[in-house]
Image (cartoon, rainbow, N blue to C red):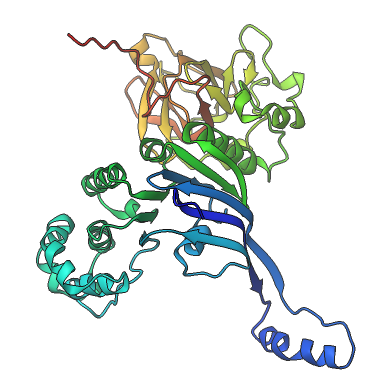
Length: 458
C-alpha cells in the first residue's frame, strides 16, 4: 500500500447467510459434514445475501469522500469493513492511521457509565492514554456542551446529547481517518453547523474523511469526490456534483421500477451516460403528450411517475374540487430530470366535484422532499383570475417558471386551490409530482439556488 494512500479497497465483497428458521443453522453445522462423509453432495440450508460485490477504490491521505446510495445499497457495511468491525468475505481493506468512527448512536459507549467515564473509555479503545486525554478533556466538554449531564449515566441521554458527546470525543483525539455515517442528522442545526466547521478544520489539517449522508447539499459542501453504491455494487466514483446527479437519476429509475408506467428522462447529462438509460425506457405515447397550445384535461396524464394517488403524501380541504393529476414539462416533453435554469411548466388537472360559485385562487409550492418550502407561484399575487367553476367540469391549471434550483437534489410540487380568494382550502395536495435537477457543464452551484450575482474587489 502506497504511503500516499489512507485507505485501499480491492475486490471487497461481503456475503451474509440468511436462514429461514433457527433450526436451519443447526442443520448447516452438522448435515453437510455427514453428507460429505457418505459421499453425497452437501446441501446448503441458507440463502446468500451479498451486501457488497467486488468493490475497489483508493482514498488518498487528506481526501474527503462522500459515500452515497439509497437505503440498503451497502454504505454502512462498507464503513464497518473499513473500521474492522466486520470481516470481508472476499477482498482486502488496508488502512493507514488511527480511525475515529461515528457509525451509529452509542457505539463504543457503555450505557451504565457516565459521560465523563465514557470519554476515557473511548480514549482507551482508541489507544489514547489518560494523560493525553486529560489535556483535551476540557475542550471535549466545551464542544459537547451538555452541562451537568456529563456526570450522569449516558443511558439517560437524549439522542442529541449522545451524538454531541460522541462527536466531541472523536474530533479531539486527532484521528487520521474520520468516518461519519449519518450520525450528525440527530443534532440540532446549530450543533450540526459546529460539527461541519470542525470537520472542515480537520480536513485542512490533513485528516481523511469518509462521510455518508442523504443530504446532497452537505456532501457537495464537504466532499470534492463521491462514490455511489447501489445494491452492493460501485456504480460511479468521481467528482461529487456528477456522482450526485447520477444518484438522483438512479433513484428516480428505481422509484419507478415497481410501476407499470414507462420511465424516460429529459435533458440528460451526457457525462453521466444517461442516453442509454433514456433510450431503453419506453417513450410516452402521443395521446398523453401535449404538442402545442393549451392541453386538455384528458391530455395531462403523467407517463413518467407512479399513479397520482400513490404520489400524494397527504391532502386537506373541503373536497368540492380535487386535483387528480400533475406533471412537470420541459419544452414539449414531460420531465422528471431537468437542467439547472430550465423553463418548466407544471400542469395540473382540477376535477370539480361540487359547484365552486366564487372566484378562487390556485397556487404551487416547490419544496424539498423533506418538506422545506423553497418558493411559490400564486394566482392572487400574480394577478391571474380563477373563475367560478361548476360541478362536472375539469380544468387544467398551468404554472410556468425558470427553475433556479441547483443540481444534486430532488424536489416536489405541492398544489393548492382556495375558494374564495384567500379563503379556506378546497384542496391542498402535498407531493403531487417530483423532479430532479442536473447541472449541465462545469459550473459548480454549491447550495440550493443558482442566483445571478456580481463580485468586485476594489
